[in-house]
Length: 125
Image 1: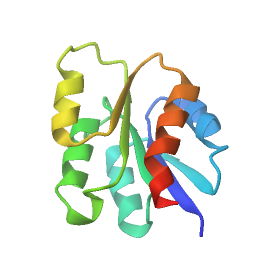
Image 2: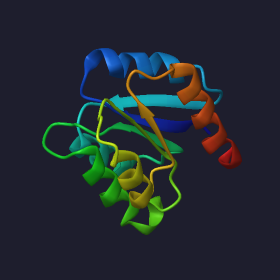
Image 3: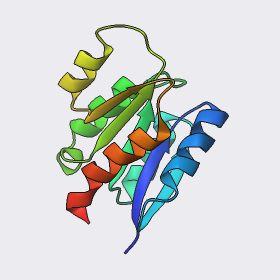
């Protein structure tokens, strides 16, 4: 069974970079959307092994997306990795309180992000 990592990123170049960086994960399909709303629609119909999201998205923020997912029992243990250009020093603390598993400030190393994601989803393999 193929597992799915959902990427939520509204910037085309960043979304494509993540798709390429994560595309080589063994036994994992990468699906990408550009809004939190599209992400919520997708998770309602597909089983995920992880979510990678930006924070600053149109309409609904990545913060709100994480909060919405964590409020649902079925997503309590879903690995969530955040990428963002946010320079607020409280961002990482806020994300940890919401239940994000990892935070990468842009620009970040796609290889490092992939490594963390592999660690987070490996137990579910």
